[in-house]
Image 1: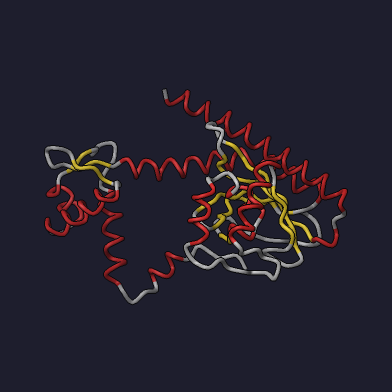
Image 2: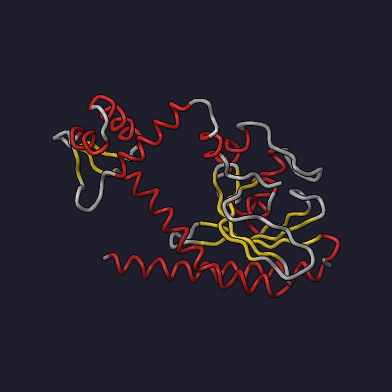
Length: 275
């Protein structure tokens, strides 16, 4: 089964309450900053939160080392660039999901197969959106869950656009999981497949995540011309002919192109408004 993003639950249920308290306090420090308080000193933050200055200083300095806060020459703090980058990722996903909704619905309705939108995060694919097809066979993936990149068409098509050395390092850090007897775990074999995928512009998965199911994926490109996500479908392998597989490949690629065009257009409009 796909892995769920349950790290937060692990922390909450952990006996190490000090860890949870430190995270909570760090978030509360970040919450002190806003339009009316763009910069704050240690004493001001400590007073707002009811904490000691020493504890507050340590938290603030830790946030500085992560880039979530920046310290000015006068010793005051402001929100850091990394916090902006994290917020920008959330906005990026919102725009991406809005651009994908219509094309995903069309793809799912065309053959009653579930359609997915996912992004690559480390060795995993995280599902952003799913539109379930009306067919009798449902291959579900709840938005926010994740699964192994090397065992999915989504992951294959996105890994294919990374430098070979980066992929090798990423996949070699620990043994690759094998959720199905068909899952390929040999790094060199995977790299050869990624090269073919990059040239073809799409990836086909045959039973590597779930033994009896297959999928086709194509990349979604952003304004920079680099993939920001991928779209795929899910189907029962035994119910699809070779001709249908070719037709579905074109449909998935067309869906990805539609999402790319809509996403790039929305990003450009958003950037113009910001100027």
